[in-house]
Each structure stands twice: as C-alpha cells, then as structure tokens.
Length: 224
Ligand code: DC
Image (cartoon, rainbow, N blue to C red; front, side, top):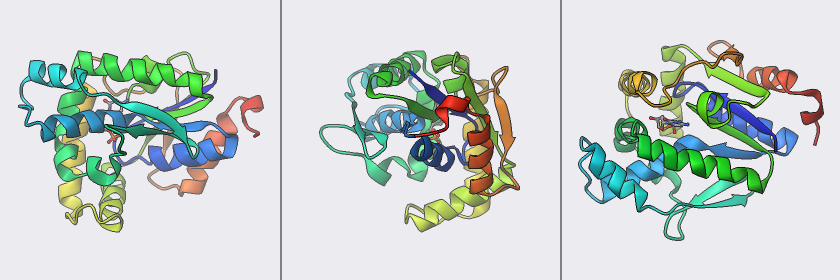
C-alpha cells in the first residue's frame, strides 16, 4: 500500500497537483475535503443547526457515502448520485469547517479514507492526511501559498465553473475564516507535519509544483 499525502490550506493548489501526480504515477486521486463537503451539504439540506455539534454528529452518522474507483480517482456517491459542483457553493465553503471540526465526523471520514487502500495506491489531499490519516507515508507534502494567490485562484475557479461570481476580497475573507477554524480546532488541526516537504506555490506554475513533488517521491514510485 503506497500513499502520497498532501496537506495545506484552501486554494494552495492541492487538487490540481494531486490529480496530475496521480495520473503520472498511476495512483488514484482522493479528495478528502469533498467528503467533509458532502457531509456539510447533507446537513444543510436537512436543515441541521450548524451551531449544534450533537445534531451535526447525529445527522452525518446517517449519511452513507459510497466510494468507487473511477477514471483515476475515488468517486463519491450519495443515494446513487455524484454531488458534483453542488458541494462547491459559498454556503458550503462557509459551513464545512464547522462540520469538519467535530470528532465523530473526523473519525467517520478517517475510517473511509483508510479503507480506500483496498482500491490501490493513492494520492490523498486534505488537512490532516500527513499528520493523522496516513502519518507514516514516506511521501508527505505541505503545499501552501500566500492568501492573495490562493484567493485569486479560487475566485477564478468559481467563475470558470459557473459556481459563483464573488470579489477576490470576499473569497479571501471566506478562505481565511475557514483556515482559521481548520488550523485551531481541537482534533487533527491543519499544520505542517514534522518531516513533510513544504512547497510554497505562490510564485510557481502548476507544472513546477508537480515537478517538485515528483522529484521528491521515492524512486520506485515515480514510474507507471
Ligand atoms: O479542501 P476543501 O476546501 O474541499 O475542504 C473542505 C473542508 O473540509 C475545509 O473546512 C477543510 C476540511 N478538511 C479537513 O478538515 N480535513 C481534511 N482532510 C480535508 C478537508
């Protein structure tokens, strides 16, 4: 079982880098944030009070997420449907960290993630993959970038995908609010793991970041 683990704050480029590295080495891409987003989406759809930790824990425990390896990644299904862009809205951005800070929610997602090794080798991105979910991986990265660079990328992505059309300032405020909760929460907060390789992508192209990651992988993981 081989796992490339990539953590970092919102908008640092984890998804693009993980997808491309996964394609290059034939490892399945796993977006762990999407699991927290799905649970947030389900809570919001059911009208759960997002300031009530017990209600969040009770509702998320009932959500069944089916994981299937598909087209180089692990795809998620809820009631037979993929959530798609429904989990990328500003409302979910604003509430996901409240769901992700709850211990029962983290335990649920962590066990789903660890179970995915049965599908093959993985590139897993998130906030606690290098510190808590797969801390023993020999390939652990902390990908970061300035708040300005991260907000610019996210804003463009939202416009390109037709998800929202917010100002870069509004996107930046939302990212920083989420990062603040994610990095100060009690359970598995976002932080750079000891021994993880830090890459600041503020002034790097996507190809350059991918190359840095590829160069740092164990030699026998680099080829398909
Ligand atoms: O990466 P993202 O923006 O899709 O993550 C959504 C939320 O889930 C965000 O608040 C961070 C949280 N998250 C987490 O706590 N642990 C992970 N491994 C991945 C995401």
